[in-house]
Image (cartoon, rainbow, N blue to C red; front, top):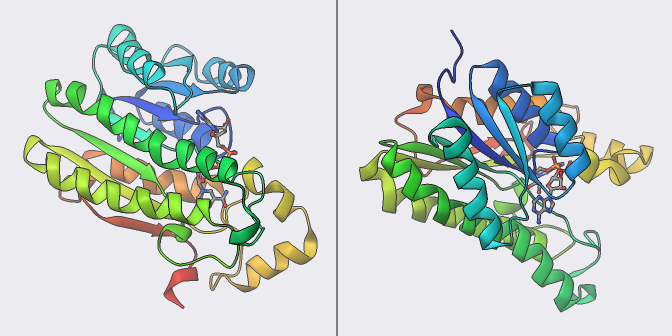
Length: 250
Ligand code: NAI
């Protein structure tokens, strides 16, 4: 018995990092998964690794027509839609610069992927989840959707938007059995964080800021997302699942 037996999920940003690990875990737990990303070759490689229970398609989360196609693909290939993980994200071109050094263009790009992308995903998943009698939407925010950041502007703002957007959607669709929660990872080793993690001094600083005393893995996050996707979390909506090794507890 898998924890997601019979469920159909869309995961955005599933070609790499946490999204790819979540896709493999979901499939191992019995789900069929639609993988969306803009890195086609890597996305197809994840699809191949999973096998018949996966379908990759190009999904630029800032493009509403791509979302329409992604939801259609879930229904055409696997018959319905039960779970959406809004995981695609970007830190932008200058994540460690101060606010006044960030360009408006970069602000718009980061807000577009992280915030608008999440809005569009919810918007197009809800009608299909309604037909399925309910569903679970998991929006990947960050610890920087909970507390201020010492650098950057768009990234923490975009992740803060994801947090309250999740609660608003949770309230609006609770009566229809559609649950919406946000997930707040701490410092996790993935391609997005590689430039920081590969610098031993910077890496140690992150470890020192984490009470648990280590950098997180994609698996640490994927198991939390799996719980929220499954019926084990059926009384949880509008909540924040903080997976940060204790960073924000301090
Ligand atoms: P990653 O860079 O390995 O994966 C992100 C994926 O999103 C990539 O495959 C990328 O191609 C895709 N993507 C980017 N723009 C897209 C677009 N417009 N449309 C569709 N896909 C797009 O990064 P990681 O670390 O796995 O990030 C996953 C999520 O977790 C992101 O939302 C990120 O902001 C968030 N996060 C990451 C943390 C970390 O320490 N790595 C900490 C907290 C949150």
